[in-house]
Image 1 (spheres, rainbow over the protein chains, first blue to last red):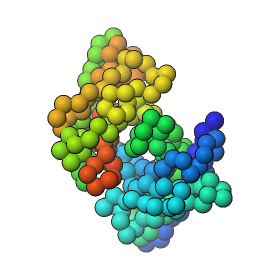
Image 2: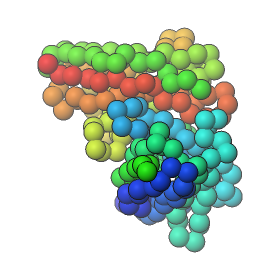
Image 3: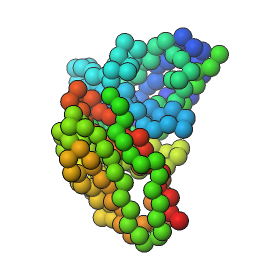
Length: 120
Length: 110
C-alpha cells in the first residue's frame, strides 16, 4: 500500500535551517509529483511547492522562493524539503502530499506530518 | 497569492444539508476546473473529498458533492453526520502554475 513516512519533529533556533524528509513506498516513485503543505498553529493549510521526482524540476509559491528547496533521491524514493533562515512564523506542521491517481494538484496520500518549532 | 475565501464556520443538525463556499478569482477558481476539497480532523492528515470541482474519489460517500459557478466553488454535505465535524479546505490550481488553499471552514454538527 502507498505510504509516505516523514522524519521526526524538529526544534530549531531562528536563522537556522531545517530539512524534512518524506520516504515513499508502495508505488512508482517517479510517476507522481510530490507537494509540500504546512499548517501553522491555529492557521489554515498553506501550499509551499512541488517537485517532479523524475528529473527534479520544482515550482515554489512566491512567498517561499529563495528560502525553500525541494529535492528528490530516486535511489531511496525520498523527497526532501529544506527551509532556510527560519523565523518564529515558520513554526508549523509540515506535510508531504502526493498527486492523486485522479489528476494533478489533488492529493490522495499524505505523510503523517512533521512538527517544526522555531524558538530561541 | 491570497488564500481563497471560505466562511470561518458552518453548522447544521444531523440529517441536514450544509454548503461551504470557496471564492477566488478568474486566475484560480474561475479559470480552471482543478478545485479540490479536503476534510481535516486535528492531528490527522487531510483527506481528499472532491477533485476537479465535482468528482468524488472511489469509495467516498455520495453525501459529499461539489460544484462551481464563476469564481466560487461549493461543497455540499447532505445528511449531516456527527463524523462530518471537521475543518474543510478548498484548493485551486492557479495561473502561476501553483496551488492555493482556502482559508478553511469549521463544520459543527449541532
